[in-house]
Amino acid sequence: MIKAVLSALLVLVAMSSTFGKYIPKSGKRIPETLSRGWGDQLLWAQTYEQALYWSRSRNKPLMVIFHLEDCPHSQALKKVISDNTELQKTLDEDFIVLNLVYETTDKHLSPDGQYVPRILFVDPTMTVRADVTGQYANRMYAYEPSDIKLLMTNLKKAKKLLKSEL
Amino acid sequence: MIKAVLSALLVLVAMSSTFGKYIPKSGKRIPETLSRGWGDQLLWAQTYEQALYWSRSRNKPLMVIFHLEDCPHSQALKKVISDNTELQKTLDEDFIVLNLVYETTDKHLSPDGQYVPRILFVDPTMTVRADVTGQYANRMYAYEPSDIKLLMTNLKKAKKLLKSEL
Image (tube, rainbow over all chains, first blue to last red):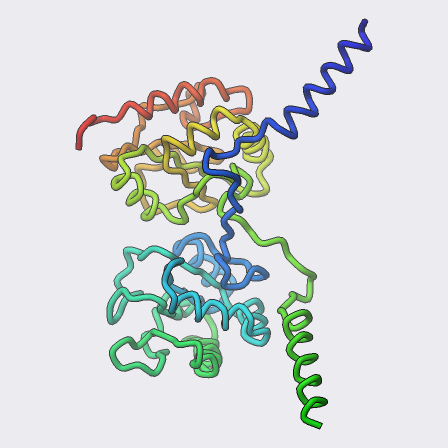
């Protein structure tokens, strides 16, 4: 009898761990990642505050990508950035990275407007590097997939810290 | 000859898509999720600003969980919250959810200090519900795994909006 109860309990435990998990009415969802497709191997900051803290404490420049999930320009740029091994390696080793689908309250991160995709660099001194720009006069911080070399050059520029010793 | 070049190109393309991806020196990482284990089926906001915007525009209260990845109390609470189907369903259908491993600049989110784990509710009117508390006098917004029923009661309290019509 005790054995039977134990078996029944075991079955119940097994069922609850297998079938008991919450699944939305609309069907099972794929968990959203912090990378949002911009580089699954990078350690992404969650918020601008956290990114700034990491940047200061690790003395590494910060790269902020503003984008939107359903924007085709963002998607195209995401593909070339996530596929570029050299760029991903540089970002992983020398940068703090943050991608946002939402604007922050810091106006310095939108020197010429709140468009997407847009890439801003921030020095560990917490200075937004408005001087590190793309090639479009009307959207200075926008990059097209064909601008990947310029972006790589800009990473090197951003790596030269404003103060070499804090 | 052309065929040979084409074949070589095809092989190169295949290689680059298979082997070309960036892998950190320390080995392949599991992509970090926005859920951070608190409920992979929920749609987590990325930032407090985004969460507030969703809360206002969808007229749903916001639940903010402050936690730390390497805090055993956070981990224990995370397990019971993510395993509780009723709670997950309520959160998915009636709440905006945000989990943060970093403090925000909004002091209203730390009425009695910046400890973890800590759960705060925010009304769609953007009012922090300091009245929705746990059972510990010295850490009013802390929950233990055994407090899951109280947390469920608090969800119901937070669902009663401060203004029923905005």
